[in-house]
Length: 515
Ligand SMILES: [Fe+2]
Image (cartoon, rainbow, N blue to C red; front, side, top):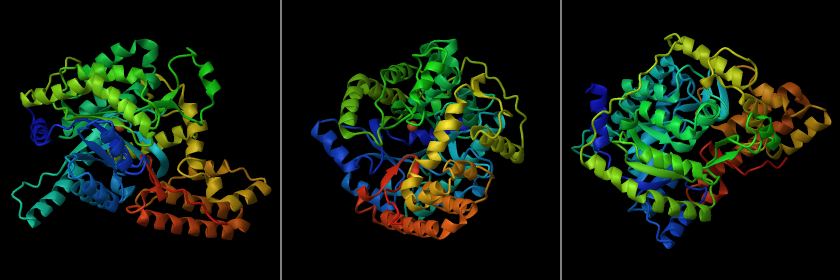
């Protein structure tokens, strides 16, 4: 057994069985309302996984749900990127993560194998890692650094508290990311995760809906049935590292015109669904989960969570009730399996390919991420291998999803800057130019990622360039937005409903300016 495997098993053995639970946001829907409704329906849950929030909010959750096992969904750690400390204050983010883990008493933190910033470009939602060997090496190295930093933070705490504990922090779990219409690299997701886990003792979160998007957007659906794809995927994937499973909804994105479907080869199936936590869980995902849970390789699974942030409470109650009926027994079986000590490393019967992309130093990988950003923003056509050689849905991202992200998502620019936008209309300047401006060139930043604040700053820069006469108006509006946002964020521990929070934005605000 390799040292990496041993280290993983040592850490995994400390994690208790979590069972069937829910991955939630503190505010959307209101967590205490949700917990109350689940109690009212007699629906016991094994744990709640809480998305990153302000410490006061997490403390209130810890206090009010004193007997509930809580785990932590992290955000803002760009471990897939070369030199993540050049994209955001990586170490400060990790120290903040350690504090949040301590508040909740979580046994793990999970983070998407994806980033919202790459090569100096900022996006509103996650873009998956480049699936190459060099990228896997960088990702593994960054996770190792992150785990080390967290361990140091916990060791200091344990020493201060006079605890005998050995200062081992919660385990870093890397989550399989969704494809939003396309992915890049010359390895498939299973091969990529196998490489990462061979190099570092992290755990893994297997997200069932994300896996469906891989089947959909790598063209696998044209080649074989979903069950055959899934069976082969599970044989190649490092299943023995899977500590948690997620399942959420899928839905078409509102920015994508519905007639697009008719242009596809098989007009009615499969749909152009993407990951959507607020949408109902389609039956196809429950069937996939059933197939996954049957697999013997799943030897270290600790929890299965329905991801339900942004979903209406009555639907959550109904779906969780159904999940308990269908998967409750299987979820208790994996506890027995790990108690029996079936934790040996499973030997895969699938021969792994190696990446043909050159094993590059960080610098070259940074160049590839630069190309990645150019392709998805429509400024370059080629230059990277495409997963499954299928880029047929890429225009849905660059022509619909991305402009929506910049102009509408989080907060609509027209609502944030109504008077300035009216000035633009009067001057005959299309707001769509803001999207091109945003991605025109890479920019360095040492700021923690915050899409809302970034939107404000970039829009003022845009106005300075295209309509300087309206700069004062835009700056005044920007100042009001920042102040309102700051106040709302400070208030949030006491009055959570004043600010909407979501998985994809750090503090989405309903504040609009008073131009
Ligand atoms: Fe997930």
